[in-house]
Amino acid sequence: MGNRSRLAALGVTCSLLVAACATSNSPLANSPELSLAPKPEAPATSSGTAIGFPDALADASFIRPDTSGDTCRAEHPAQVSLLSTSTGEPLWSFPTPQPGQVSVADDARAFVSFRSDRGQAPGLGAIDLTTRGPAWQRFFETEVQDLELTTHGLIVVTRDAIRSVAPASGDDLWVNDSQFDFDNVILTPDVAYALDRVGVKAIDLSSGRVVWTLDDVDSGDTISLTDNTLAVAARTRIVAVDLAARGRLWDIEDADRLGAGELWATPKAIFYEVSPNVAPGGGVTALDRRTGNELWTATNVGTPAFVGSGQLVTSTASSDQPPAEPFVFVGLDAATGQELWRLSSTTQVFDGVVATSDGKVIISDPHPAAPGFFRVRLVDSLTGEVTWQSQSAHRHDGAHFGVGDFVSLYGTEEISTGNTGNVALIVGNQTQWTTELTGGVAQPPQLTSDGLLVISPSQFSCIARMVVDPTPTIGSEVLGATTERSTNG
Image (cartoon, rainbow, N blue to C red; front, top):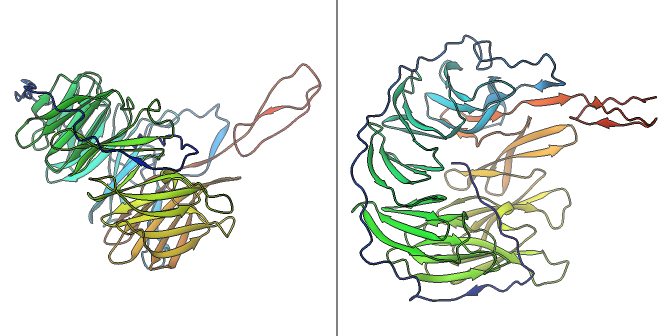
């Protein structure tokens, strides 16, 4: 699902306060069991006939927006491109509708979401990677929020429904409509856990049927999953569910939680953001996953990034005076809150951590000694040791880890003439190639057996409208990169 992370404001204090309080927040006794009865109604089914199209995902079979009075035009259409992993050169590309936020691919097909745009309905398109052309397309009432390829079909999550789609044809295999819109959905290979305003539904992905519900958590704001534990938060209430036993582990109230803040479940602990009333500089609390007892709290730190199951990385303001770097990245043990290492940075964790993997963190921040450049570091999450460091002329939004020290990075930058994207391949500390893309990178690139699939959004040029002013002055309302000015009077 879309990331709702917000970085809590960092305080001027650099201290990291870790307090143990193992006896607080004891779980409630005799808490009610889950409702295990499935919904009586079967999921709706649909033939879902896909609309055929001959040449491109953006051809006339799509709903065409009325642009007769539009002051903007697409200088560069949205594109899907396959880049060579050896050279970064485009192997092929063709236009698409304005892309959404998610895509997924295997060696046969790529599935790319597209959003509502200037009269065009949102939906999903499939690309045949063998023929290098469109396969099918679908329209939905709301935009696609998540995609997952499973043995039960392509699972498509929109705000109002979860459905299984046949990858080859685009036909619906089943559809589960929510009585209320879904606020948060977590997909696993066999089950979707869906949060709406009245609770959580566990939906079997082979049939689309609800197999159990947690229906007494009103106004839930987020859920998180680890192993056999599902954590559910609703304002200051937090519930942990044992998925194997289909019963509650604990159900607590903690007034210190930031309502509608982030929630993270790991095998060792459940974490949540602390209210600014408790920690104005930002903070995070860890609860024991099995009991709900508080393990530790860290204050004056930014929203953390989790690395595997054992460590987390956060940031705090540096107490050193310039020219020292203004922030410090801190590695913590997830179970104890013990500080493992510190690393100076020019940015905070929300902006600096672009990817994590078991035991690895990639940090990209403005270079402290080379204005206009970025420093990319691969860091060991247990020791804080910098495995390698590289320099780039581009900022990065995300990264993929490959075999060994292979890393691909991607990002979008705003420039005076519009957005530009970049994709780079780094092996060790050597950049093998960098490819620039007009319009930016709309979704995380997908690695296929033939290359790296990259989706770029449309880039528009707009003409300014004249703003009528009764006085003889010059004025314009700028709508885009291209402006026209004239004198009134």
